[in-house]
Amino acid sequence: MIARVFMNNIWLLWEIPLALLSFGFNKIMKFAIGNLFTVYLAINKKKASQWRVLSEKMIHAPLILPVLMTKGPRWNTHAVIGTLGPFKVTETIAIDLETANQSSRSWIAVIYSFPGYKTVTSIESEQISAADSWHTVQLPAGKYSLGVRYYNRADTINYPSIKVDNQLFVEPYNVPQDINNYYHNLIEAKNWFYSSLHYYIFTILKLRNYLPESFVRREYLPVGAPATHFSYNYLDSQQSLEIVTDSEIIKQFDIYFTLYDRSSLPLSWCVITEPKYILPPPKTKGYFLLRIRPKPEFSKTNIIVESNLSEVNSSRQHLKIVNQ
Image (tube, rainbow, N blue to C red; front, side, top):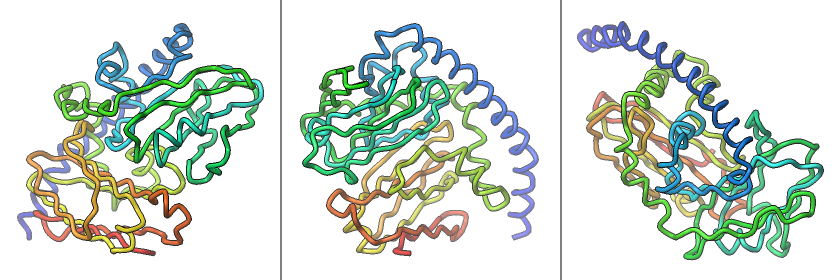
């Protein structure tokens, strides 16, 4: 016990200064790369008026991977993700529901301000009548961008038509079913730059009991839909994870698990469908994220998900997902 406390103190002596350097580096790069990408989109109007769906080809385009690693580094390996914009809006944006519903049983559309990228509003498929052909959102005059995430996707995937101020802005855009295959090789992009950007994340997760929870959530979590519950933590090398889930939650929710390397690149992922799931000990330090979303047929569920995490010992963590 004394030896473990001593080693933890030694770890803090060099870990915290490196984490502070990484935190500062992350903020500087996020500001610089974000502004550079904003200028790029403002100049390249053709790109802004086309669906940009994450794919092998897209992430190898200049600037794209650094932008994603600063703006949305907790990769969602379970959804097909497309973005559109920026574009000027005087009054309304309308989304072609028929195309979206045929492509995915569950989807989320998020409208962001531009250039601030603040979430203005989100639209979830489960909240909208399936009988409607279009869904219209009233907005103050300004510039906006749109992001659409498809879960539970169909064999044929089309991104929807979009109208801006009642004028067709973009037509449906077809993408292949295997478009997310690039995730399997994404870890090969790891280098000193991405490792430095996200080095501090492991540290703040390991010290989360001593830090404001709002700070930890802001630094680690993506912008989620209101119905999505997140559970997350660090994992030391050679530390296994046991996840035990109530049977009713397994029945009514999709539980998406992703394990990340310390550079925030995905190592493995799966959908948890059994009450007990054990992740073998990873070879390197990293962290995991659970996205827990109601299945489309249970969108009106009364279950409120709660997760209780405990570190059993240095070789195992235990996570219990229950109905609150």
